[in-house]
Image (cartoon, rainbow, N blue to C red; front, side):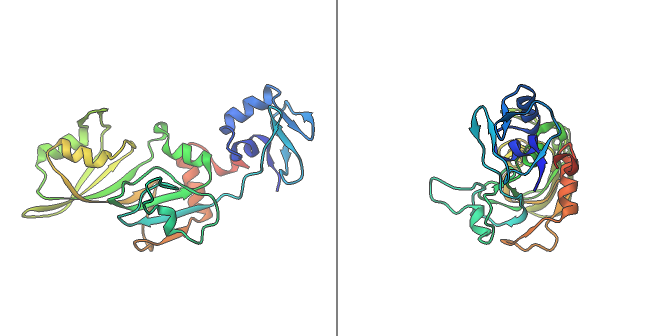
Length: 246
């Protein structure tokens, strides 16, 4: 299947699409032995030999996109040197070399996207686009009005003040509360650290939404492929459109 030369290079994992465009303009790319210096050319990587800096590249496998409802007890990585169970163990039928978009720590459950589309992954994780993530946290006490306000306005962590967040108390009883919080940053264990900064330990944490997608219809430990409409929506949230990648 034909695709733009910069897309083929990007999908092969050598560079971002824009960096691949620069490679072409610099005369570093050859197709069937001829240097290509103009953008816009389309080729079928299965039918031609493409070299970057004199080295042939392999055509990337077809893109795959999955939504997983991650349970606790799995690490969000493709492989784990300590031998722990990974989220890929939950997708035994997925034959592509996929990777999680961001991470949920081992004790956090909920929505996790996995793909082999590096450009989409980079866009969804780039702080420029402020892609929203929603979590439900269970804590052992009610939040005060001041604590809610602090979470909303930003709290001081060891790596800086957090960006404003949306915070909503879902329900509360003596000694227990469930709080929904929406952020767009992606710092390590950020939600747990935010609650700790206002004096509350998170007892359980679940991501319920990411980039406009939810867990509706996907049970814990199960997964499903994304629809074409959902993939297009993700591209828009990641600062581009899927048509631009063709």
